[in-house]
Length: 444
Figure (cartoon, rainbow, N blue to C red):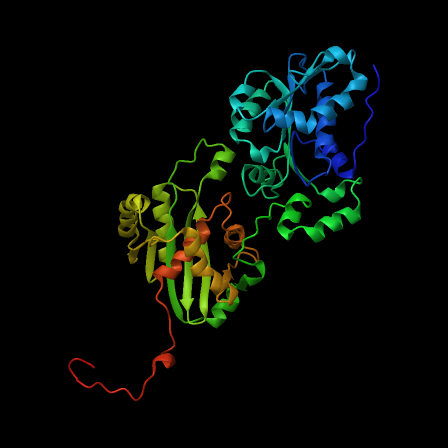
């Protein structure tokens, strides 16, 4: 048997050296992700024992693309070329029809498509590579592949180019979350520039000829690609709470609620949970100079917890009105809300919000775009730190809006403030000292 000869570039080597069981690689075009995947498939297939010492002869290695034609196009030719020198009998061990390679130790590497996830069920797996996971149904991993890895303590590699904030994005964020690190998971980024075979001049040429969004996605492997056409990061203004208190702007506080779901989240998988919308409660002080966003309370709650969150917000901020979006969810929440009012002795003025036949995109843009562009919306940071998670939550949704793959709960709730609030005018605009009613009774 010949020696398997290969080399990794720096970014590929970093992934290979990681001890993480599950690796998520977000990659730019031509960054070398497929080359890395092919070598990794062979190296994993050459292993004879699981981490716990079990014989893996009957456990398979899977390469999973979005479809069988995609698997044949993406990796099959490269996989055959790399594996051929180590095969005992390439004519026998490379099975074209089934896209299967039988390694010298008797183990199988199989290339498959995820267009029918149920067809992937059955065999024990020691390793799986999911290529362009963003284009697969999330159940491919959670309901099919993940359980198949359990008996051999198998590992997995997810690779792909960003395509909006979907389940691939959620998986990458989980793998790189510094607040809740999971030692079994690690995330990596391959930019196109990390591949030494692509020249700097070629990268520069692509950057000159492509839109900023396309270049960031395809070459820099950035999830922040479907940038909003309507909201610009430079228009987001923030103020610390001490400065806000010193200013003490004269105005009226309003709360707008965009209720979503009331689903019991116990037992849901991570990707199922991330796909659910959240209830968003916007707290805004409306003044002559603009809006001061005091809070955006959000979460995936049951109906009772949602009612409690609304009442707590009303108890804390004392709004003139609490607006709740009209519909079945409002009808479901009102009995609980009334119970909470009586229990806590807090009785806010609850009014009904409607979309008025407007499309959500139009309603959000008309309510918020001009205000942001003219510096009339300011986020007031809480005292617990300069970077509040709730502010990032709102900004993230607005900067993705109206990407259909992203949530817009916060954008919707904030836009409803425009409907619920009374427009504040300066009395100077209405002074008319020459006016005298012609009739004291009718007034005109």
